[in-house]
Image (cartoon, rainbow, N blue to C red; front, side, top):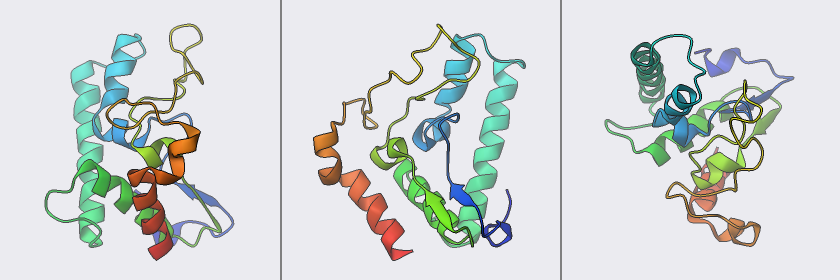
Length: 153
């Protein structure tokens, strides 16, 4: 991955986007399972999983090398560490996915689909699959923890 100090200043830095899985789902390879189920893989599922694991291991090594995670980080620690990593960029703006903030694992949008996936219709949920209502956002422990991480810089 591109080192944070090499990001452009006049840019928006984010851990994920609407066309990528939420970070918790990415870490659990749920995007691979979904793409396999929908018939969207162009390589064998074994190869895609192997590539995903190698990419994840490289990312964890970068985080560990910068002192952002310990030896056996939890998924939540990895998500927060990735956000601390983008805070180290000179980017003028930082974007945070609401899905990442509450631990959602399901993709909100799956590129390459029309009727096959409920794009933009997936209700926001936490990592346990429990719906998170807008009225509950500011009391959500995971969102509060990520906000504190971002405020500490």
